Image (cartoon, rainbow, N blue to C red; front, top):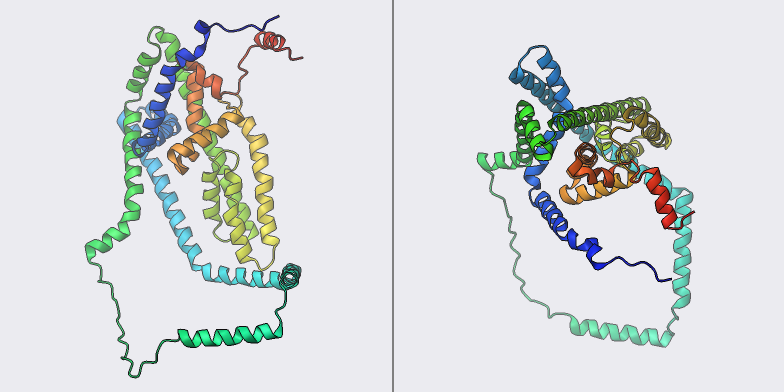
Length: 409
């Protein structure tokens, strides 16, 4: 019996050209427009976070514009407070660097004097003996002839002696003292770009919060104006799910950073506030963020403690806490409302990191969650839920029939 063949008119490749071209254009736009799109993406995600606060203030009859102003000012105060706290912690950390370098050097000397040093010396001696055994020893006559030849060549190559050499002149190069304008440019250049990005984020955030209903209506017109009731309910439900997800994620990561900071303070690691904030931010990176945030505290613990007890305690803190939060607390709080498949999380992290760098890595999971929620509530975007969601792609009946066709017991 001949195997079944798909007719040429039924092959799906002919209809894939247009979607592939559109996808390539979208990816190119995301890559080349990242300077503008990154602040907009951050502003959209922040709007889901502080949207419930704005809604609460409006229920208190504070008005739309005052509610948005109060919420944005509170967010700006939190960001400014965290930035100032991080700057103070970094300045305090820099004062102890010489002492930490001495501790590291002492540990290295202790390792050389211990069993590791004996092992390294033993390996070096074996290598030296192997090299001596492999190289033949030259005869005495050949050694004397080689030495005489080297002396004659050195005499011929020696330059003629100068009778009256000129006295060398010392030249000292000095940089011109920078003026006030140049000094200000050097000091402000590293700060101008982040401040400009932050300003764009807050401007776009204010616009989104003020025009929230208008933007929702325009989105409804784009994705499903034929059934206003169903589309409105779906969009509102998606907004509530995203707000809940981002608030829970923010609270969970903040709690993780707080526990890490308190634990490092009890262990005795310097600047525990800095490492707590760093751990909370890095935990937005899926799977490996929390463990990457442990590297700097571990290095600092090794530089502070002459022994290894502080390093072991710090490692145990991260090894115990991250699986506890990731495997037990997160599923309990998140539920299955905005679930992503593990493969989708990994691919989205790689994709957004390639597009937008470290910022894309931090935003990869929230952006993918937005796409999955839209795919669950908008028929035209259902393929996003199929690609990235954690729900089964086939119904039980379809799955059973597919297994029968594939002869898969």
